[in-house]
Length: 401
Ligand code: KG4
Ligand code: ZN
Figure 1 (cartoon, rainbow, N blue to C red):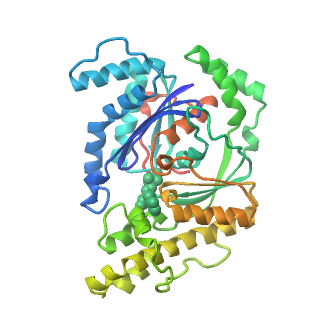
Figure 2 (tube, rainbow, N blue to C red):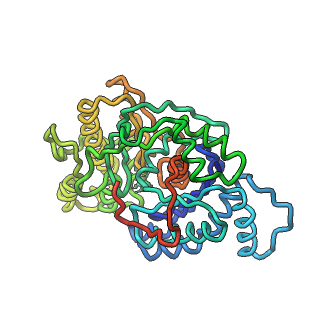
Figure 3 (cartoon, rainbow, N blue to C red):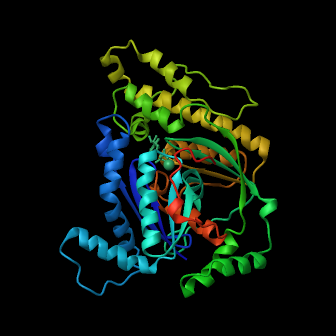
């Protein structure tokens, strides 16, 4: 099954092409430079940037996937060339997947409208995808050669850590939806005849790995700021740029993680939820009266101390959740997983509890991207979960999980 996926939930304009769970292309047009001087994402700027970039990003994803053969002369006009690539590339696509939410409303709208437009124009099936589900499944994306092969086991405990959310999700079998393989395949092929010949075999092949509709339960989540958001805000307080996470990571190297004490939010061992806003406020009161010179001299220590407090909090609750739910597999993903220190600590934790842990296999799969939307679209397409009335599909900024 060939999937075109589109993601525009925040400040990255993304499109990807997948062959089942294999990534053929994954294009990310980052808007960081546009938002940096404002110290955060400005919705209107994001909307305009998505609008002006989306066609070129989709064309690039289709072109780089190498699915279509362009045996004609490209137009010299840029817009026309983009149109040519899209119309030729779309012939090879079976399904379109798009992020429906959660995210920034006006940014989501650009991707959703584009996906609808393409689905109608080229008569393709459309799948609506939850952004957080995308982050979770980024761990199972493969390259063109089918690597890495990762064994999925249930129950699994997923930690997703981003700029917009921080959640611990228990993934289990969905008893109600469990039907036999053959019965499912027969039903699905009858209801959704594949567009291309190869899709029949890929349906059978894919069914093996993503057999069932799973049951997701959010067992812990942030009650206020997300972990990435807290890192971004702390960096802003220190007069550093945006996004703050990677800047603090660089500064934290060699800094003292115990420069001063910060609170342990929701320390009660029975609570699996997170709270990062208290940490941020406490950090603010520690440094608010410091002269600029003192802050400057201690940037490494301040970055290390705040980052450490966020990561310790993340791991403390995750460890409690592991003890309580006894999963067979650990999954971690989301933008903050780009942080090497966090990855190291999670690997250490997995070793301690003697469990396998997966984190996105490529740097670009941590932060927002469309490949992760594509893999969820693939699974949903296998289960026949297509948008029934394409015209009516709407963005859902608060889409629940
Ligand atoms: O998943 P993502 O791209 O977007 C959301 O869905 O929110 O995550 C963005 C977040 C930002 O808060 C950013 O500061 C953080 O991920 N981030 C990092 C690193 N790279 C990105 N945080 C810590 N260390 C990093 N290297
Ligand atoms: Zn995200």
